[in-house]
Length: 209
Image (cartoon, rainbow, N blue to C red):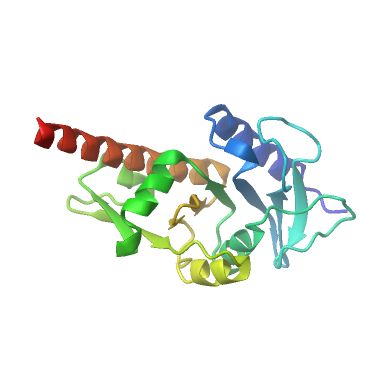
């Protein structure tokens, strides 16, 4: 039997912190962490669970195709194929998918452009954007009802070991080297989204005055 206690505890800690931020409304969102690379296997959140609670059925072990590797009555989260794409196409160790009001609104505001870009913002350094004038561009993809279709479009944007993709009105997925880095990237994105919405609201208030 594969030993994945350390990965389970790491992912559970991330889940607990994100739950405390109330980023799992209506059992939405899912998390994954790599257990092995050859062959690829990872822990992913079980479908339909209240992620504010910590139980021994929070995650299940799956292979590179999202198929359970152990006998279980649990079902992997619906977006498991997104995590499969990340672990197959990159060296990332953890990926996080959450639905928040800011990331959904930003994805709708900029969805027709297919991306949203941030510049002159300190938190883009989370993505190794250190130089003055650097920009962070986050792609926005269509929210396909078919998860295989969604996964196919999503996978085109997995080019590095860290990154982020917005799904229009369907949340954001980020990935990084480990749980700490993935959470850092997610926090940076959520800050940038909230900043952008606050700035647009302020501009509209000033223009209407």
